[in-house]
Image 1: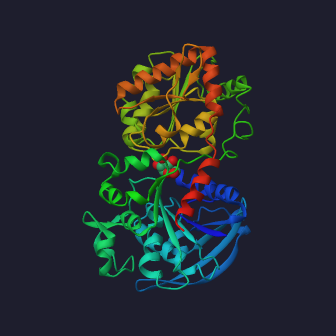
Image 2: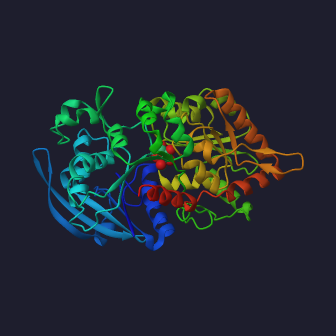
Image 3: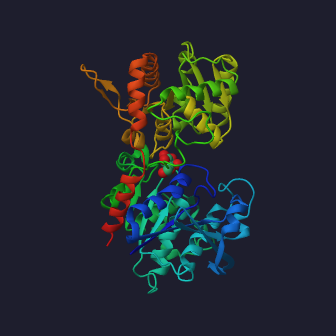
Length: 481
Ligand code: GLC
């Protein structure tokens, strides 16, 4: 039996801020299902204050002791619970993780995640789970791969452990001043070469170099990150290591995102009973005090309001799109410029636009269920989950052909005999004219009821479940042995 340990900074439903949490909360269970008795998948993450009391009440303490990081001796507790058939371990340390507010973005993140990674490695023999594959996710877990290679490999208990490092977003690499190498990371100057890139410590670079396999969350992104346009400086490293780079498309949790059973939406529906989707639109229009009309296309944008999500393509065309008879609902937070733009857009078009400058999962689901057209014009998108969720909830996606958007949404066209191809509207260039043109094309299609029904039914039936991808992860693990 192959033992796999996922190491990462967040997982749904315990504590999450973004797509990484979705993946850490659903992929382990899917791999477990796909692998059956051939695999034993477990997960380890920090025990943040945000983890609810009801989960805490289910936890068992499996280890308590000390972790040594540089010159410091620090407390560690390992708690465990079972969730959807998978054991989740939590690293408990009040000083680092018992904080209110955000999960990361604290002044001492370097130390917090160095501690986390050291705690993971040093505790494995005590929790009796030294894995065959240590699978680390994103920069917060990068040091687990590094410590395994530079500190633990000589210990016979860890000698056979292979490692995989998954990049969910190459933009966040964990970059620090080389000065903190010894004090914060507990590493000697002999490791400067490994740890440094472009003049600073770069945790992601070091993990890419140390691991046995690097993966990222879509095939297209795996090829894009070898190009300086997308690599945020790391292309040299990835070109060097290209033979161990893989791209596996994420899926979405089909239980969590299911319009047929979702308890938070106004009316459950399926691709066979599309008319029921309309009740969700009506409910949202009412809730947001927009004119309640079935014949107007409802366009949605649910995103972090930052430029790389394509906001700088959307802002120049927003007023023009709104000259047409449409409604627009925006949900998200981000840069002040975009937040203010959205507020002002609503002011200018009170009868057509609602800008909700917040993030809330339930609200997002109500919008997915209500909207007709979903915009995602990202500049880069490692995988992207929203386009898949929107599709499952019967919205027509309009996306830029990048990363996972390219891999999951194929351009719609209809042949002369009426056969339809593709599952959305896509454009190639990062140019606002193309977004405008494709959005208008999607709106025009939506107005043609017969065509709409055919396309939306096809979109809703597109398979975005984890099944195939979970198999690909198992194949990747097998390649390591
Ligand atoms: C990151 C990426 C996103 C991806 C998610 C899960 O949040 O930005 O594109 O879907 O990770 O892998």
